[in-house]
Amino acid sequence: MSVVRIQGSCVAIRTLSPSSSSSINRCAHGHGSSDDATYGTPTWIGKGLTCVCFKRKGTYERICMNLTPQQEERLKRLKHRMKIYFDASRPDHQEALRALWSATYPDQELHGLISDQWKEMGWQGRDPSTDFRGAGFISLENLLFFAKTFSTSFQRLLKKQGGKRAAWEYPFAVAGVNVTFMIMQMLDLEATKPRTFVRSVFLQMLSENEWAFDLLYCVAFVVMDKQWLERNATYMEFNDVLKSTRAQLERELLMDDVLRIEDLPSYSLLS
Image (cartoon, rainbow, N blue to C red; front, side, top):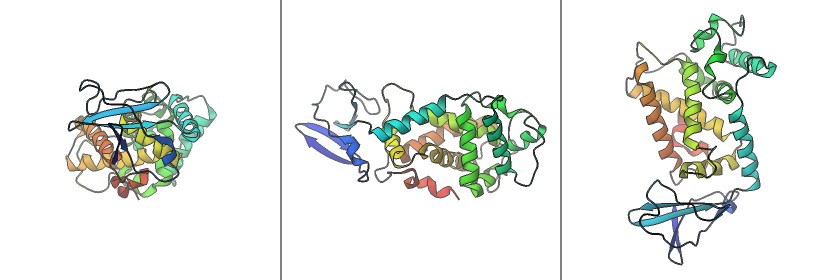
């Protein structure tokens, strides 16, 4: 991150690719008092302009962003996806479930959308539709994207391969739904005004790749499993592992040389 001073202001500007840099504007607002902003707590200036001010080591760092039309459109579509509840009566939702089964177990025939077979994947019961209430249809889309895009990593986590596993492991599919919900909370995309620097960084990544959310999901899932193994965790510690996973993702997203999801250090865990 480079810092540019303008008329007494301290502007934090992330290094962006040429296609993205046009959406970052320098902010010429003066400093406020020490109470105006603290590290990690944003202060919003102006109407229609996303301006976040951080205090770090006695100085202020600001980044001001106006969304490009492409960012606005992609954010709108992503927010729409996040609002769709899973509806077991919808043919397209039923088909997505069947597609997930086929991608997960290509050599096994599914006996029905309500079947004991779903427990093999890590759903809580015979009807997986009851487990989508926390994160909605997008959590199913995320699992399906993971299965099709990074099949090796998907199968490794599904089968709990590698490392010393706990006697009481996390259920794979339900864990995936929780990972989706965690990312939704971390990015805070439903907020009227962005409250985190992470969100602004993610929006830049979304302008680079419409599937940034789904890619971030895949990274988050493998990071979660890695931390699970490193902590020798058991099922009762799942929420703690999820919190530490979020903290690691936030650290990586704010690294200066990370401009795309593919630049995240943990992206290398995927195969």
